[in-house]
Image 1 (cartoon, rainbow, N blue to C red):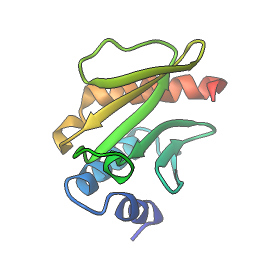
Image 2 (cartoon, rainbow, N blue to C red; image 1 turned 180 degrees about the vertical axis):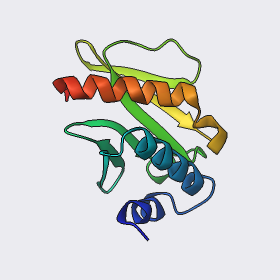
Image 3 (spheres, rainbow, N blue to C red; image 1 turned 90 degrees about the vertical axis):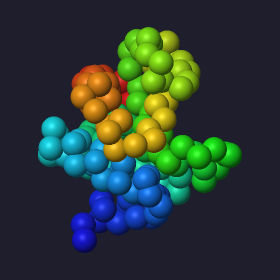
Image 4 (cartoon, rainbow, N blue to C red; image 1 turned 90 degrees about the horizontal axis):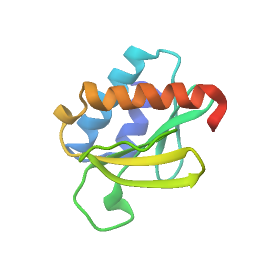
Length: 126
């Protein structure tokens, strides 16, 4: 088993979180083979030179039943009902939090946002 898969076991031991993590990982590495996954106690970061997205389980720290949250930074605010929360930690840096409940929600729209976040981070915004 690869190290990246073990990170998923550690952070998302239950279903459907484990399957959702696996699908995000698969699609991200398919799109950007150079992406590395790095882990802290609370989340898994997707990064090349800079981190561009973070995967975490809210039930670990706050009450809730959402199996996985994908957080990512963009230079703009997204206008989508899928975005649970947006914070602006600095000018022109909007952190978006998307709750993911099923593998089917790891779709082209979410991957498009991750592509934009990847490009934003590649410009040295991190």
